[in-house]
Image (cartoon, rainbow, N blue to C red; front, side):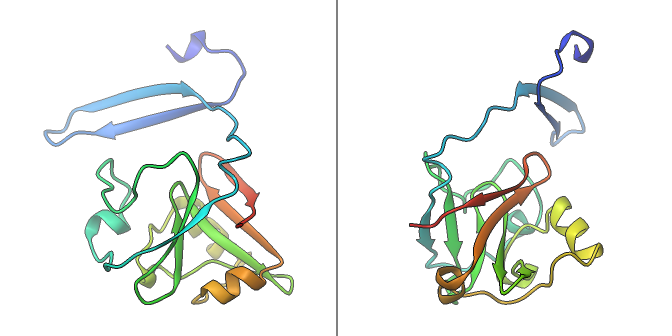
Length: 150
């Protein structure tokens, strides 16, 4: 199947099912629409203390569907993540992702950036978001890209 694909960017989803079966899904990686890159803030009322928060699964009830990117704020008023990735705020030339303890997925690319010393974890608030020099979202599929919160 993979031999028939051209040199475009693709997403490969590998799923491990309940009884051990593996499935593979290949789809073209489309550019995100510009409207998606202007996310809305979503204040969470409940805590997200669940294994489904900390591990990548297809069961994500804490992430509501939307045609726009969403930036989640915890019930404790800490910046968490977005609907499709982790978040970094650039403040005075330093890059800060929130720590896992605020209830986020410890993504592969996030771990890499921390191990490389390119980012420093910090508890972040809406005020930090409003005052950030730049706001980035990242994941291992799309890499790092900038968003603007309206």
